[in-house]
Length: 125
Image (cartoon, rainbow, N blue to C red; front, side, top):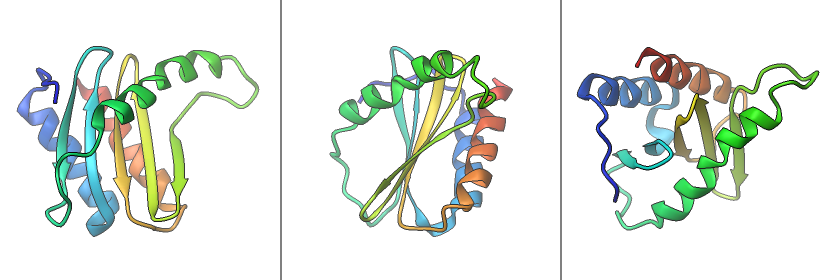
């Protein structure tokens, strides 16, 4: 795992905001920049060793998405949700850094709250 220089208060705020918004359905939380990443949270019933490098590389494309969708009639890019048969991935970007959370199945409407909380913390740095 690549290590970041993420300050402890920001690390703790991201975990707290995500846990508060998602609750026990939060599986994992990863912070990333163009060059580094750090898994900030992994639920205790899950095993370490997921192919985070591949996930992080995919989520880093969010920087491009912000630029691609930046001047559309849809408005500003806010967040991305990917649905899977057993859960979701939600990614939030702020500039060239971001975070993504993996979750169990949960109501799709709850992602607005999750994204808002994560984006607020990312903007504080």
